Image (cartoon, rainbow, N blue to C red):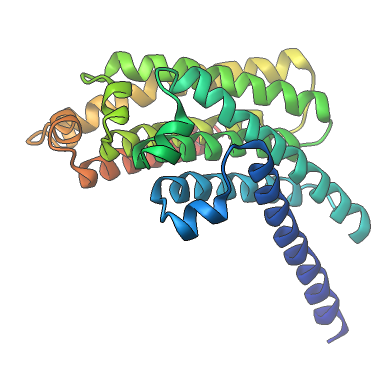
Length: 281
């Protein structure tokens, strides 16, 4: 009975910490953006921001879990460790939003699209960027031997891959991603969101594990990143041409703006990425 009570107390302590981190994440986001989440959600019913912020919260929780799954050093030390790394992750997630705005969806202002135009497609892509970055940071802080420098290195390496993948994804896509998303095509945003999350899952796996040395760990990261950057577009092509051979997903997404087709495509890429990390893990 005593053991159960101790475990329950420890669990409640981490639940309280998680709520504290989520609250801090919201306040930091409010401070670093030209809008207030409460106002946009409650007064303006902004679904686009709700989608984006949901991805932000999921990214925060992914980082929190990555820190929590590390080796225990005692309750107080663990709370400080998880809390510190989670707040560090919050800062990086806000940085990832800026990178997404400047380098991934670089042909228009994300803030304008989400706040003024309430563009759900843009919100979806931003959510995918948050979640992908959350996986990378969680992987970088989960293993033994790393630290602040390694976490930063893997985060920025992950951002480079995400930006590069944005160009490759456009190359393999018959419609103009930026034009469709700016034109309020929710389906295009959801499909791209799924691709970013898929990349993030693999990059998170590539950045995880014991830090041996820069050469070994970066080689692993680069090799797994190269595999997924090549295979994800091919999976998308095969999914379109083989699995749903009687349906043109590009047409469904760009012309018909079929959200259901976009969800299927996004799910297929996320599912394949999950398979990849287990096959190569």
